[in-house]
Image (cartoon, rainbow, N blue to C red; front, side):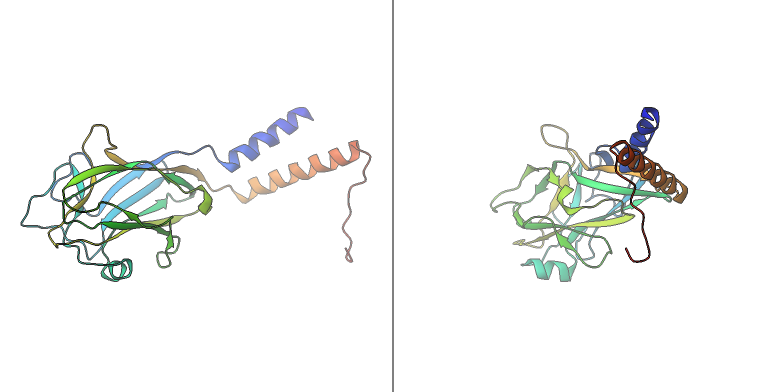
Length: 241
């Protein structure tokens, strides 16, 4: 019986999934001219596509940063107008056929900007590609005045219950540029700040129906055994119960 219980325990742990690990990564070092869009990345059991929204430009008469991925031509003055104008960076994660994924968070990353770039941003996600849920509150990218860069803190997504999903879309909506020549990027330079963009989570095969049936039968046997050991008769369901 102890051996049987051990097998059941291992099965439960396996179906629950392992602890979070790097699920997929985009490396921006080596990107130029605002970067490739769409920019594909492949992780373990997951594919990802990073793109500029339709309202974000990728050509400029001004200087363009190297080792960075981003855009220009921002015009929105508010969150609502940015969404309407599709001024955002967006990426979609899709589990491999026969797999599901669970998302735990976004690692620390770095943003880089020109002095007239968008000053505010909001992260959000969607499980259907239409309705988006905000992740925390809008935040300030910079206060204007000069070009610079800064590391952004990691984002914990465990409270959003993004477990056993097939696909998910994230976007970073930005607004508040003071000139359409303003540039905003994910920074890919190496150094003290992050040079890549990584999603933490897990991916695992979808259990076959027979696996769930076997596990359920095993749990039922364990419950009956424990009740009998305690001198409690197993409950019997009747049509009136």
